[in-house]
Image (cartoon, rainbow, N blue to C red; front, side, top):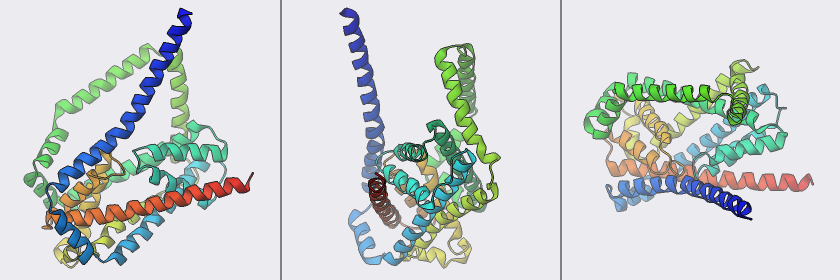
Length: 351
């Protein structure tokens, strides 16, 4: 009896830990978004921002941005399909590939990585494939994004060097960030942690849970590494370029929607807005490293502050960021509902 009670208590304790972990996963990103938005709105004139949005914004350009955004998701879905076929999954329709991205990005508005988890589960069930295989291709997908972001950051530092210097000189955060990245103790500590974890892994390599973990890692790596030898690597690169061109154009076309950003487009010294757009794009892309609800908070602040580097007022920059984020998020909600309806009807017809 005591053994049974102890077992139930242990089981209940594990359940409580899992529930607490799930709550933290949801509450922390939401808390980050709420705190950053409240802090940001405390620094701007909200009434003026509302007047700018209602009286100065040309929403036709915002509509074009939404169309380009949908195209980027479709291209991303097709690109993921190339990886899936390389990992041994059968060809799926462009609609299924697109739905996997529509649903994933809609769910990411709730909290980070929920969408990534869902699209892996969705595709594994649709194709009756091993979950680790699909997850491995998803890691490859995100690895490609990370490489592109790094390249864009380097490019921005080269072509927009003056803006980066202004960011460092004008904002204490920029100075601290650059000092943090240049601190040898930080990188030495990271290297030390990697060595310790590697040593612990080696010493425990015969343990059952470590053997199982190694098997999972091998399967993940096999599915991840397929992107380096799969058929269609050239098309994969073309589609990757297409995705990020779409992302860039989303920011650029919205420059036409406001009078203060249109001034950047008419300025030859900024290459007709291309460089400010690149800086804004890089700042916004880098903000995804901060866990939040659909980027709300970090993305808005990053975009607004990057525009301020080019003489745009804080409230104007906030208006631009809120319109772009708001309409993009609304579009994702619609795409998520469309995905849910399509999947429901498809499964009803296949019963």
